Image 1 (cartoon, rainbow, N blue to C red):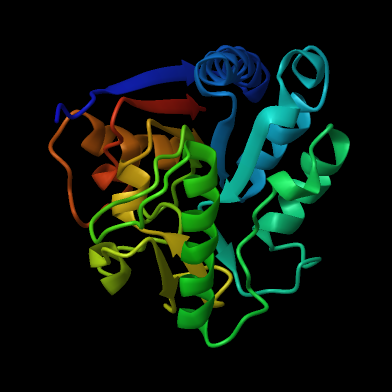
Image 2: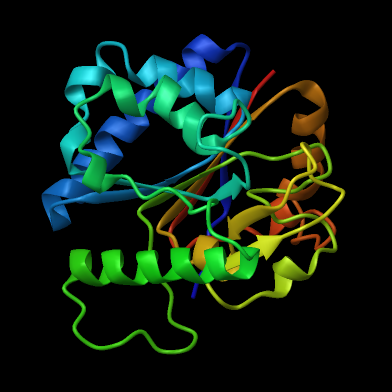
Length: 249
């Protein structure tokens, strides 16, 4: 399978980035809905996507995107209360989901109330398996090495090159199931997490990085023109069709 080359878009500020990204999402989402009747996305957390989410809740995108046909999942999550300010689900609820015509049965948060952590990971994999089987009219069981295909996975990148909750040198980088539990002192805040694994991320149609700040942009540039560098997990993201990097100074 051909590995897509990174498509890089640069902006001097967030406003034009949000406008460009909104137009991309509007067209991409509608094309998928016209083809298959729905759209699947895995959201990321953090300050940078929160601003994007708020922009999407305003015209024109609040009315031109077909929100009712989108199914929302998460790329990673912290084991925190659902209303905690560092919860990725809470951030999306506050800045996106509660402001748009989105049905609650189209929202699939990671179950951080379940313990132990490995059980929560298996539970979310089962949720993904059931939901994607229903969406795609898949009648046979999922086999080993088979993965769901998101239309879009939205990603960020840390200053250490981690993405989702896949950290440099962590065993989760080598996991071949769909969802992994992660415990590491590299995480900020330092709480356990769930994350989609690299095989799931790389089976997406499109992966889109939204990265802000000179230090992170410099790091991204250090590997975007080169071969993947395992010590920077973000460099290992290679989806099936398109790899987009939106860089904001």
